[in-house]
Image (cartoon, rainbow, N blue to C red; front, side, top):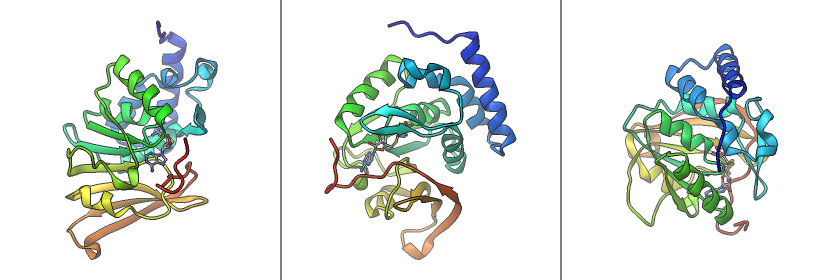
Length: 221
Ligand code: SAH
């Protein structure tokens, strides 16, 4: 299948980057990555013209790709440096993983739903993004293969609580960005300054609306 990246797409992407900059995104590496990743390739072709609007869109299996402003915010809060190991929970369309990959991170991504996992792993490989994709329950982090601990962890679904295994798989000095809450979520940045809970620095960055993180009892199909 031939994928096109037309002048129109490029123009819309530039506009989106300008909009994100105006709204306060200042990490140049994030802006550059968003300027480069063809978001429309991560969506159904019927949504092609909407790909660069700041909105969440359907990606199948009842899930959504996060809004570009949310991807930009989470990526900025993560403070990623090239070469860092980043664990993502909720691969979804693969767009967030691709953005982190463009920023030079080594990305490991876990998805709960088999349909999305199969489709997105294939797409990322076809597009040349070296994201390591795993099918599993992100509550447990990445268990089957031990690539951790991670410099950074990003959760892209609404978590009712902070999953303990994720904090264990985060390096001391590492950062986790996680939307916490059931109906709506508060964006948290947790810096693991030491092993003990009292040594975790928690900062809050406003309210968001994510699809829920499904746990073992509520797996979806
Ligand atoms: N980062 C994605 C956002 C997708 S929406 C993107 O850029 O498109 C969140 C995703 O989290 C959905 O695909 C959903 O299936 C997945 N998810 C929900 N609960 C999960 C869990 N416990 N473990 C792993 N993935 C989960």
